Length: 357
Image: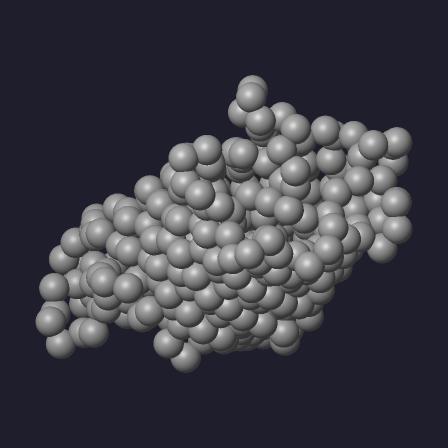
């Protein structure tokens, strides 16, 4: 049999091409992910409107159609291109207090747990917050709210699964090779604080308009796995603004347009769209929820869900529209959200501030 002297060059060429593709994919991922994901990343959800306490602490107890609510949220991102995708989970609860003791106002209290796992290095983030807000009616058709939260955050990493540039042996990354990168800490914790304002306007029973603004990391905590003081490890303050409306079009349809904008350091995000509730029963006990959102230069986000009495379930999918779509075939992230609203036993007939069926 004749020996093919070109086998080795072909193999090397194939390895080089694969390596170039891998490197290019990594570059696209880095360029496609917001800067906040790379440096002191703030966890975020495409269904921001279903994650009220992560959006604005002034939303604590800001429940137009109930006395309390409980919610869970799960996001799975890049599962088709990463062996260890980003997975984010949250659980929250908030309630209204002292409505019968404060004239034309009430207090809100809440709690929030966030957990995130990212990448092969098992970068894990856990955050626990408690929040307080005050809500005051301004006349009969508007409401002003202010709130803040305080919490503890922890981030940890498993360095045994990490690979660094100086561990590339010419063909593959070999994490048994020594590296010049030294992580002085693999577990860091800090205290964190957010503050926000909310305003709602409801001139008639079929129209409800809401706007809010919040600042995150007000205390400017420091987060780093290194001890080098020359590195600025201060988490940049994050600014979030939103405006939405709830409009009852007819006895069967209520629409909810939303605009959301956030900025942190040099990264910004703009999301806009709407969802609609379609009444499937006589008094709104069963509703179909559909929606469509667009994250600027990143993803289209269709959503579908159901509401039965005071329990709502929604599912959304991020269809990638950026250059990353060439690698993930438009498959970005999936999100599941479950929220239950409730009333206190002596308050089941309380009038809603927003349109209902």
